[in-house]
Amino acid sequence: MAEVKTIFIVDDDSMQAMMLQDYLSKYTTFTTHIFPSGEECLKNLTLNPQIVFLDYNFDKIGKDAMNGTEILKEIKAQKPETEVIMFSGQDKIEVAVNTMKYGAFDYIVKSESAFYRSENVIFNIIRRMKLQNQASTYKKLTYVFAVAFVIMIIVVFALWKMGMISNNPGWL
Image (cartoon, rainbow, N blue to C red; front, side, top):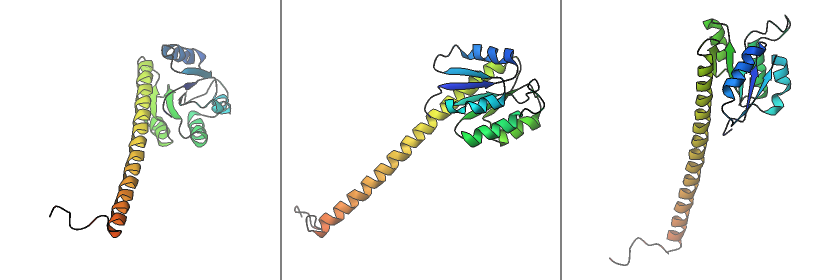
């Protein structure tokens, strides 16, 4: 996952979702999809979102609607590489801690600074993705170097056994 291409915004408050989508629209590197319920989001996970902004309460949908934590668990079960950002009006530390415990990347309270914080979280996710890719590349290079070093030792040992390398260099 090298770059963010798709972002889901899951919120039963359509005005809030459209404002967030509008705020994020200044970045043309990814597309955003709005879903009014967690169930709709789960049905569309085949679009492979890299980031999901997920509301905690879905009061407007109905009493039988899944809450944000249940949706978060399901998203992480189906797409563990997807980063979920809880975007909620709940200003309770217990709710934030619980969502982080179940795999949320961050918890943003809907406030005056929420859109600015969402932008920063996206940049942090992108930065983390780049660092993970670099770490993976360095790990692969380390393995290649180790294999090459072992092969070099085997070749030197084989040449020494065949007498092509001696303990006495010719200049002594």
